[in-house]
Length: 180
Image 1 (spheres, rainbow, N blue to C red):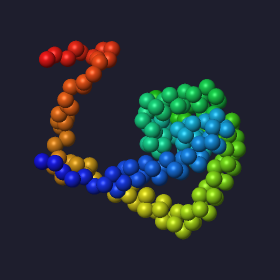
Image 2: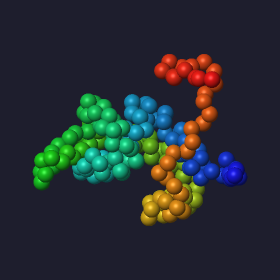
Image 3: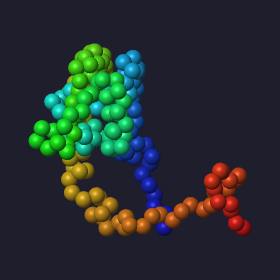
Image 4: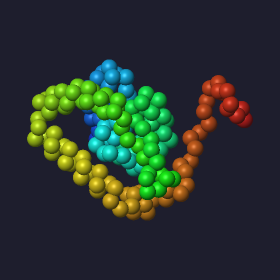
């Protein structure tokens, strides 16, 4: 049975992705000027708002997977923008904080960032932007409250969808030969 999907332009994940991309397109040139990626900026911004934080808490705060965050932190540490230290109460725990050089970078790049925010606010409107941020925060809370919707609908998540029919054309390196 074929299900009629909503129009692609009405897809919530795609709408959110397009909006994120439109916003980030405004910030990328500034980040590039300061030699940092979006993910590095996210980490530095999060660290600039706390004295120190555990790695897994930082991953959660920045919406980064722990392996990606480890790689990002290594690069930031090599540039002396962050520092690691043992937790005084539990030497097994590692805390991350922004370094003085990282704070200087945040202060410099932050001037650009706030200028971009001011223009976004001017274009979109302060009230509309505040309402949008409230709505997105509420959506985040609702989607994270309770079990996955697919689970609550009783959808079987334990088995994978059937594989598509075998690929046609020339085999790629590592592909098994097709049998007739």
